[in-house]
Image (tube, rainbow, N blue to C red; front, side, top):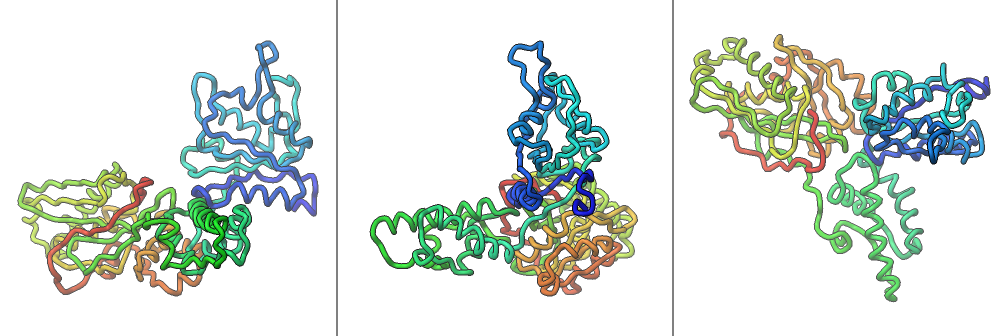
Length: 455
C-alpha cells in the first residue's frame, strides 16, 4: 500500500497475545522493513494524563509529554512508535491516560495533536503507531475501536523446537562465550526442556532455561574440561535439576461422572477434569473448586436441562428430589470461570445420572443453553494444543468453531479427530459409553498454579 501511495495513513495496529510471543520483536521487524526509526514507550502503570499531553509551562518543572519526547529523541516525525502494555493503563484523580490517547491514535484527529507544553498543534499523522497488550477486555471500548486488532497466539511444540534451534540456542551460546563444538542440544533434549521445565505460550522461560544450561557448560569449559557437552533427556536434570512442571495426564480408565474439559489461560491452554457425584439429600446442587459466577450458572443450566429431559434419558424423576448433586473441579486453589465448560458439566452430570462412563480420551468445550444447543467459544487453538499435549485423540467442538481450526497446524489436525456438534445430545452420543465401568475415582491431575483458568 505504501509503495502505491507513500503518504497514505496506515491503520493503528494492536498486537494482542500472551507474554513472550514476540509482540515487541514484531514491531522492531516492521520498523526495519520500512527503514524507519523504532521508538518504544511502556504504558504499564501510567496514571497521569500529563504523561501523554505534557504539563503547561506555568508549572514548575514542566515538560512535554512522552509522545513528543520520544519523537524528539528519534529525530524524525515518522518513526514506528510502539506503545507497550496498553491493557495496563490506570486512571485516578490525575486523569485518564487512555482517554488522552484517543486523539493520538485516531487518524482523523492526530494531524493536529496538541501538547500542553508546546501549545501548538503537532502533526502525528506520519507516525506509525503500534500498541501491544496481553488481554483485550481491559482496554477501553472507545480506545479499542480506533485500533485494528491482530491476535498473536502461543507457539506449538514444533514451532518452539525450531525457534530454539535457529535463534535461542545460537544467541545464548554466543552470549556465554561458547563455541558450537562445545555444546550441542538434541531435539529430544529441547522437547524435554519445553515440556518438563516450562509451561507457557511464549518463549521467555524456554530461553531462560537454555541460558541456565549454557551457564553451567561455560563454567565447566572455564574449568578446563574439553569434551563436547551433548544435552539430551538422560542428562538434562544435571543442568536444570528436577522437572518443574507436571505434565497433563489422562484418566487411567473410563469413569462414571468424570468428564475432561478444555480451558484457556493467559499463558496457554490446559485440560481440567469435572467430577460429579450424588448423595441422599433434598435436591441441592453443590459447586466447589473456586468457580466463578458464569461457570456456576453453566452448572445450573446443565442441571435444569438434565431434569427437564429426565424421562428421555431414562432417569427416575424422583431422583432429583431425594438426592443432592455435588460438582467439583480440581484443583480447588485455581480460580475458574467462563461459559465454555457447559458441555463438560452436562456430560459429567448425565454420566452420573445414567451410570454411563465418559470416554477418557475425549475432551470437550462449548457453551450450552437451556434448550440444549451448543454455542461457540474462544481460545480453540490453545485448547486443541492442550488436548494434544495430554495425548487426547478426540476433541468435541461447537460446529460454529469449525473455522477456528484453520489456526491450528495442519499436522495436528491430521493427527487428531474433531467432532462438531450443534446440541448436547450429539455430545452425549460421542462421549458416553454404553457399558458400565467401575465407580468414579478422583483424578490425580495437577492444574497449573500460575494463572486463572477460563473455560
